Image (cartoon, rainbow, N blue to C red; front, side):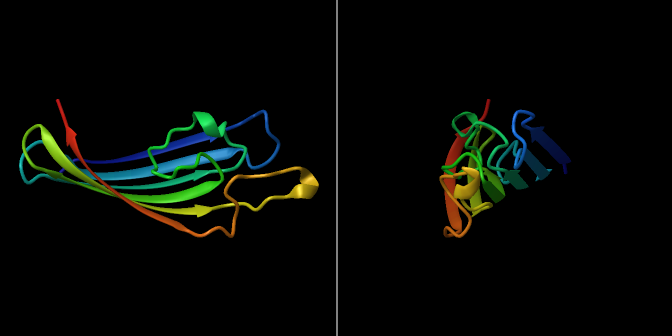
Length: 126
């Protein structure tokens, strides 16, 4: 049963605060044939100044780029050798509020409702 951990970090050296982003992933299993299962958990934190929001990936299913903390759970089920059913559940929290005195504004600020999102898809693998 394949198992791996992945850790990533980023720092925006052009900003003086809220400039770090981190992600940790844990994977168990692999999908290669009918009945195979893969489970993946991710924790991602992207502070408000960690990167340019328009250029960040949206693999976390957030609809937003920065100022977020996301827990993601993924379960894949093999349907054939080349087709799998992927199920992803995302739980997103906003991290920081606006600070008008410091001229700091974020599109989604702390206090906004927690976002819960499910994504199911069929994926062809080659």
